[in-house]
Amino acid sequence: MSSNDDQDDLKPSATPGYKPTGTAKTADEYAQLDAEDESLARWKASLGITAGVSTGDTSGPRVTVLTLELDSPTLPPGKTLVFDLNDAAKLADTKKNPIIIKEGVEYNVRITFKVNHSIISGVRYIQLVKRAGIKVDKLEQMLGSYGPQAEPYTKNFDVEESPSGLVARSGSYNVRSRVVDDDGEVYADWEWSFKLAKEW
Image (cartoon, helix red, strand yellow):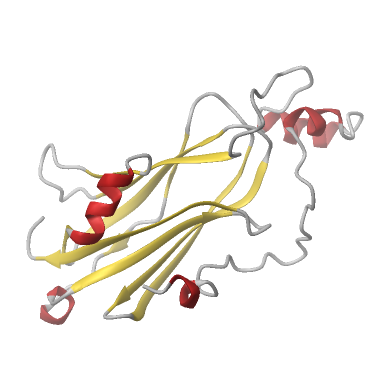
């Protein structure tokens, strides 16, 4: 996959009325901002932003994407399809040795991520699927807005159905996944491959 050719497809769709935030503020700066506004204070509290709460080291990434999981009620007992995004060797292996997805079954994608500091807004997961270099599918799923916390967040996507048939089973599919926000900041970007088969 040519990463330059994919850039337009991997941009998040525009949110009507959204204006880029410019310089990112820390959670402490947001806590102090418009402190007298009650509704804004409730919104900030829902994101875990309150005055005096330390958000830790702000020198690292604002978001760390931990795992991407494909889940289906048809998976054999004990079988999981989880990508550990901190394991570069295993991710590289999935490009050479595609994972197997059963054809014609319902599945959903689940992503787990940690917000380390600052508020993140308009975060999306974008997935571009190609077969023989030709785009066959694109998924864009809104993750939302979150504040920093010690525990990771998990987001389940809508249920989808895998393609089926002889043509769908022939060859492998190359996938480029990205987690990006409304400002265009990329938090994770990785490639993987899958094949469709009659069984998991």
